Length: 78
Length: 205
Image 1 (cartoon, rainbow over the protein chains, first blue to last red):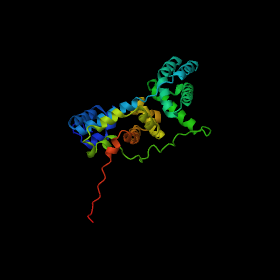
Image 2 (cartoon, helix red, strand yellow):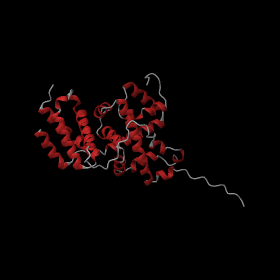
Image 3 (cartoon, rainbow over the protein chains, first blue to last red):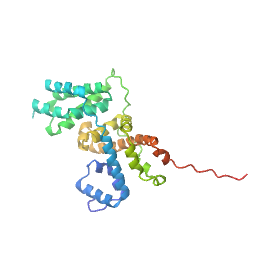
Image 4 (cartoon, rainbow over the protein chains, first blue to last red):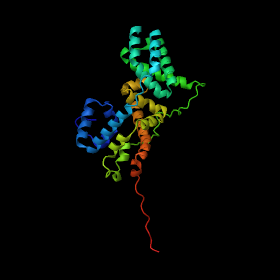
């Protein structure tokens, strides 16, 4: 993305996942945000992808309570 | 610089929850997940001097976990029901967007369908959709969305270029959304998305 050139919907949608994952460079992020300020459709899409990502994140499984103590003991015995 | 026991212990203990979380998603069985984490810790300790940059400890540990999972799965006596790996770089996952599916003109009269869908989406729907993903897709979604690793960290874990992480994650999310769209049927959204069939022209006898 050229920081001085506005981006269109096609360019915005191509980078939408990188945007919600905070993987764009500062100038790319600025160009994306400028587009989202003016395009309701792309803004709604970005919001949808962001909220869906948050929902998926709730599946984080985390530690198994019974295994935790055994694994901690293992680490200390290595 | 050799890794000191104290450093290894503190870092490994701090990572124990995320390691178990990823192992559970990979194995889909808690007993196997515990074995996988235990084996990962043992391997990591044995090869601790291979860790070039202590800052990269997290990606290094996840890489050992993933490699251990893959090598264990290849052992012939280990019976698995997991789906076979797809070629992760194949382009056969057609683009699919839930948002676009719900934003077809004949649905727009119906308020805000994507909002309604997200509100109705249950944990069980997400669990099912994630579990149904081919392994190569499931692992990038777990690392990116559940454990919040950066693309560079995922690239280090899976030993693939960052560009491949980007494209694989995009395809994995398309595949996940395609499976979630099947849940939309239960919520009545999908039925409304089907265009009303055209009436046949009646001919007067």
